[in-house]
Image (cartoon, rainbow, N blue to C red):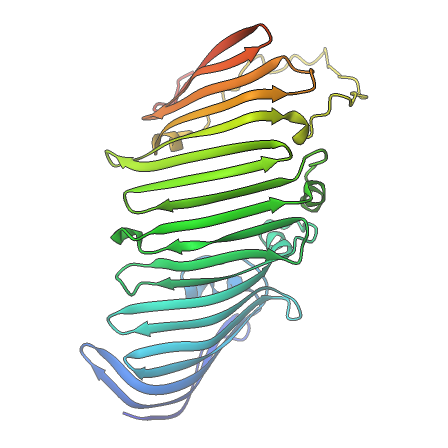
Length: 365
């Protein structure tokens, strides 16, 4: 079967519109599938991304106008959407730009290869409704495929640009975890100007020192591990977490170690005085309850088990605090959370604190 010039449109100009124009020959339809030799030009447009929710079968965020185009090529049992370009947002400065291709092989699977470029501040404003300051852009690439039977991210990368406030460089592979393939992700994050970033986000980060971290996530379908070092000014910490399945439930074991905590790196300045006096309303009787009776949903504590050590060997506070070190053992088992002990070392003594929280049942009042 041959098709001459064919024009197809789905949707409406007022909502979401998808159009295709082209020719096809040697079109064969059998019980096992379809093969052809065809080439179509494809376009898609909408006044807002949310207009595609009905076609996509899921709720899409309202990120602005959409303009997309590509070449649909069919050769035998292979379908390729090539030269794919997608812009979301303002025409002159899109919030999201994507380029790539999608290849589908009948009875074998699909491969998606895309590059992207995102304006971070514009995306945050569209999602939250609160425009932040300029936050630069992030770019990267991603290859996704289900050729081996299940979807997996064969490789991806994400890097920041056009800003001196921070630097993000994340990349790695996540290849079909169901088939025990390797998971490896490297991450590097720098916040060079905490005060400037805080101003852009509307958060007070005055007094904070520059932040730097490097970490690597590795694993397979049986276990996962994460190791990272982080630096805030002179304070350098190490985090190690290993996870596995124990009796069908995720179990994590790890530690956080910080040899010296310099409180000045986190905005603590003992030289600053408090100018505003503390005001207490003696006529306010309050609710009569020391603790709120409002229930909190802590059901997530039943979804995993945890064994974690938290250690700060030395606290440097310019003599303004008497705590010298902090050592805590955190354990979560079947919804029962315990910190036993939480040891605080003071000048000339120590204190052990025990904390327990049972999230397996809802308390009655």
